[in-house]
Amino acid sequence: MASFTLPPIHDNPDGGWGPSSSNIPEQFKFKDIPYAPYSKSDKLGRFADWNDTTSDTRQTAVGLPSTRDARGPGRSRRDGAQAFGSGTASAFAYFHVEDESSFSLVDNKAAPPRRGGFTRGRATGRGGMSFTNRGVAQRGGRGGFNNRGGAQRGGRKGWRDWEKTNRTRESSVAISPQWTMLEEIEFHRLAKLKLEVDEPEDIDTYGRVFAYDKSYDRITTKTERPLQLVDRIKYNTTTSDDPVIQQLVSKNVANVYTTDAILSVLMCAPRSVNPWDIVILREGNNLYFDKRDGGPFDTVTVNENASDPPQDPAPPNPNNPAEKTAVPEPPSINSATSLSLEATYINQNFGFQSVQENITADFAHPNPFYGPEETEPLASCGYRYRVFDLGITEDEDVKICIRTEVDAYVPGPGNPQEGHGLVTIRALNEFDPRAQGAGGAPDWRSKLDSQRGAVVATEMKNNSCKLAKWTVQSVLAGAELMKIGYISRGNPKDNTRHVILSTASMRPTDFAAQLNVSLANGWGIVRTITDLCMKMPEGKYVLIKDPNKSVIRLYAVPMTAFTVEDEDGEGYEGDEPESAA
Image (tube, rainbow, N blue to C red; front, side, top):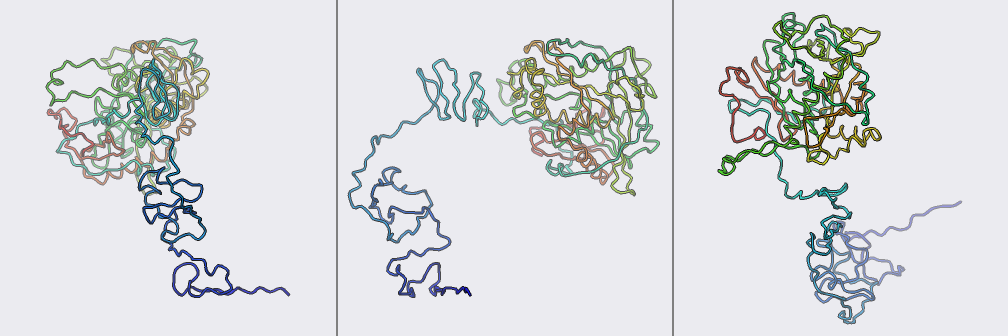
């Protein structure tokens, strides 16, 4: 029967690794060969060390030149690397004692430094790109440039990126030294929140909506239509000034009141880049989320999430007399402020133009903001007041009442007053694809019909926050469809004439899934801010998004802030921006 016997194990009484030099059995044939002991902390630089580096006189193994000549003095191996078996001669290496001067370099002159750039003939830079004498950059390696001065895809740096200063945004509202910061929340903490909310309860409806003109769905780049200026009135009243909400407060319908435009900014806060602020008023057990007149809620952003978004010119330095007395230049049509006003104009007029005014549907009550003294015609707009239950348990009574808006309806068998066929209308705008801040967007006229997916993907990247807010507003309003128009300038140098190139139609819930918008995360953010404000005493607060960091801060402000009584502006015009708070 087969058996297995363990061989004898020779322990090392001297400690360390490897066999002991004092008790090696005689029958071992490697008895007389020296062994280089080593410790586990030693670094193994190489598997074979062909050079003895313990002295300045280097010996060279047969067939290998000295590394001293090739690497320069004192650089025989990688800095900090310890040779294997250092200090002990290798028993397996045969060293050639011939003078190592027999090995010489073909050219030992120091190579001139390569600086790149333009020469009269042709020069090659470090990035693998070459420049001809006409100044046109040819395609090269990792850092190539195109002939417009922009970095090619895959390049590490763009053209003159080293000269770009750190762009600092200004806060949406100046911080007064009288304000007290109560809380600071990072965006990564907000992104982890989650709260599932049931279907809302419809309280009442107001306004009148027009039928959507389906002919706009058939527009292509070859059958473009001009964008017209439509003279209509559409109200954007804040929460506390809404007469309907004031009536609902007296009936104790909810304890938190806001609008869909304000709430969408809060629910999509982790995506936001530009600064914003929300005024929060607590009266008793009720909470109001308001907006400031002329604040960021009244305009539409452009390419907010682009890697190089549009920028406004830097304000003049008051400490520089030359800049202080210089005549300011007119703003560029491609600056951030100009593009925002242009996008707001486009959104309003596209919504007014793409409806049929002769086909209307009235809600339960007329427009609550349209007084008898008004003479201009109303725009198509319907208001739905809905209540969402934010309670985690049945005992909690946390309800939020939201004024939502819809822009039109699609005629069908259902009643628009009950939520059937409701539509929200928005518009994306193209300015100059070659201008700063375009975000690498393709030319819509050449790509919108043939490669719509590429255009949509670019817009989802450059305008992630704006599209997410539009989608959340449509979901809150209970709209069945969302129409997004693609509108471009008639001439890239003229921001007053625009044409409609196409219109896309999608369901808000499906589009939210494409944008990776989590409504549960948005409701979790709303509930967190609500609980935070409910713990505070009665008063006025303002929630501010830091202009240069992914942080929101809650401040306690005087009751006269942002009101007519605040004659001094309450916003402190100091030298330090809000980000320094």
